[in-house]
Amino acid sequence: MQALFIGQTYIDVTLLCGAMPTGDEKRVAEDYAVSFGGNAVTAAFACAKLGFAPDLIATVADDWLGRMFLDMARTYKVPVHPRRVTRSSLSFVLPKNGRRAILRARDDHFLEPFPKLDLEDCRVLHLDGHQGDAAIHYAKACRERRILTSLDGGGLRGNLQELLAFIDVAIVAERLCEQMDLSPGAMLDHLKAKGCRIGGITQGERGMLWYDEKGSVSRLPALPVPQEEIIDTSGAGDVFHGAYVASYLAAPERDFLHHFGFARAAAAYKIRRLGNEAGLPTWADVMATECAYVLVS
Image (cartoon, rainbow, N blue to C red):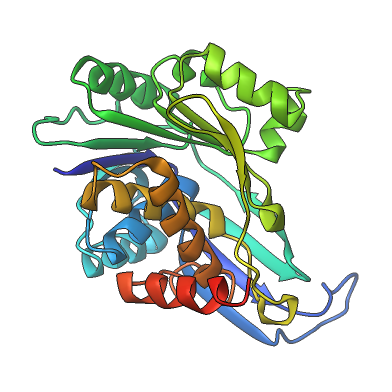
C-alpha cells in the first residue's frame, strides 16, 4: 500500500443540457457521462490514472450500481476495501457556463464497522471528511507513523474540527469558508492554528490562496483555459487532490508549490471534458496541458 484514500462512493450521472425540464415537459440532453463519483473516490481514480493506484476504503452496496463501481475499480487496479451500505449513492450533475448544479441521493448508514488495514509501506493518507470514524482513526494512526495526511475540506462535515488536528495538508473549498463564516485569510489562520503544515482554499477560476511549509501566503493562479473550452468543472477539485498526491508519491523531496503546480494542470485538463472518467489525465496529458496554457499566460 503506497497510499490510502477514504470516502463516500457515488455514481455520477452528468448531463449536458441547456435547461432542465419542468412540469410535464421533456427534453433531450446534448451529451451525458456516467462514472464513479465522490470526492476522495474520484481523487483515488485520478491518482491511479497517474500511476499510483491507492487502496480505497469506500461505501459499497450489493446492488447493480455497486457492482458497476467495483468493476470500474478493477479496471483502474484500485484495491477497494468496502464498507457496506444498503443502497448505492447517486449524483446528478448539470454543468453550465463554468458552474455545476448537483442533486445527490446518499446512503451513509453503514451496515458494518470500517475495515482495519495494515499501514505498512503507506506514505500518504487522503480524506474528504466522509466516514468520520474511519477518517479520525486513520489520521491518528498515520500521524503516529509520520505518514503524510491530506484533507479535501469540501464542506463542514461531522468531526472536521477534530480531524484537522491530525492533518498535514488541508485544502478546503470556499464553501467551507462560507459555512464557518470565515474570510479566506481567517480560514488560513484557522488551519495554521489547527497545526496544518500546509493549507489552502480553492477558488475556481481564481486559483488557490495558500500558505507553504514556511507559512508564507501566496496565490497560485489557475491556468488560463478559455471560457469556450470549459465543459464540466465538476470533479476538477477531486482531480486536483489526486494529482498532488501522485506528484508527492513520485517526488516526495519536492516542495508543495511543485506538487500543486502539477495538480493545477491536471484540473485544467479535467474541466475540458465531460464527466469524471473522461477527465482523468495521464502524466503526459498533465505535462501537455501545462505547456499549452503556461505558454499563453
